[in-house]
Image 1 (cartoon, rainbow, N blue to C red):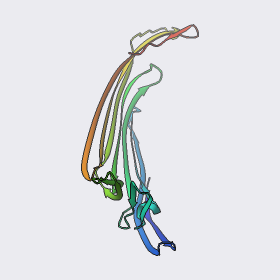
Image 2 (cartoon, rainbow, N blue to C red; image 1 turned 180 degrees about the vertical axis):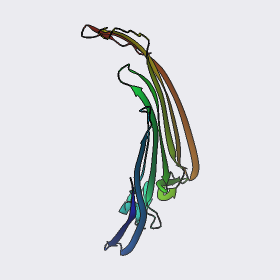
Image 3 (tube, helix red, strand yellow; image 1 turned 120 degrees about the vertical axis):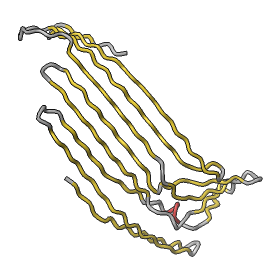
Image 4 (cartoon, rainbow, N blue to C red; image 1 turned 90 degrees about the vertical axis):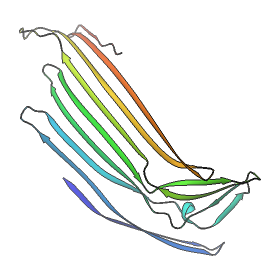
Length: 212
């Protein structure tokens, strides 16, 4: 199933104290969907996708100099766009519940469009002035592969003893964008985390499952 539509948000502000009036209109196409397919061998492929929207706050939009703290001055930006986060997931699974054997892959991806980020500049008197701008390109990704296999095969249906081995591999990626003292920066991080699982079970008697 797939759905979508136009989300319209209008924000009006009247600042009577500082005599500042402004209005912003945000039009975002929102979408979401889910698709799945089951193969003849009972394995399953599925995917979902959607986006979410965050409207800038009044303080981020309002073109007013806020000097409540004279060492930390803030100024809004009325030209900000709404932030949109795009999410996508894809997975495949093949598993036999009777033998407790199978494998699968799960992946997830997020992309930030027009993310609202602060831009701060510190002058020679150590006075910090902060405003806001939009940045696109921040993203994160996750990938997981897992497998389980029963090593004890018995023709005796009443055999209550079972030994299985499994493992999974996890990968994480993050990309962050921003500003430091007025200069743009980009940071990226990667993380790998493999693991191995062992399981020995005698039904209704003992169940041992170490993880490495």
